[in-house]
Image (cartoon, rainbow, N blue to C red):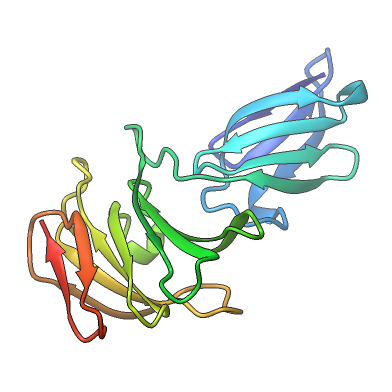
Length: 203
């Protein structure tokens, strides 16, 4: 048995005669995948009943081909366009040491839990117009998260843009509070003052 994946986001299994056995649409899986396109596949398990795949947005999942259900194993900031990307921003929530945020060149922001050992909230690249998320910083209240954009050599339209998010427990998606652009250079660092009334950005 063989398995293939295409840009249409569909994973298919085939027999030795190249006849389609099963077809799975990643966009319809009950797991959070930012870019539902498989970049790599690998069979495993007895009688090849499990399929391990990694998506273009960095999620690693295990698909049970017998039942058509998938489980999210891990995720990371990963390739978004033709160039390799990296995680660029990291900040621990000042009100909860269990929660931290990361941002990356893939244009996403992810909120993680140390105790749960997984990502609990995501802001997709569409939230920031496809721009690279170069840095992030929590406000002292632990609710607002400032995200600095820029640094993608293939897309400089939003370089220097700062997006303010509201991150609240129990919410599925972050809320955009404000968006400003005072520079045409990428924002590489953000720091808040102790009372949270002001912050400064570095380019």
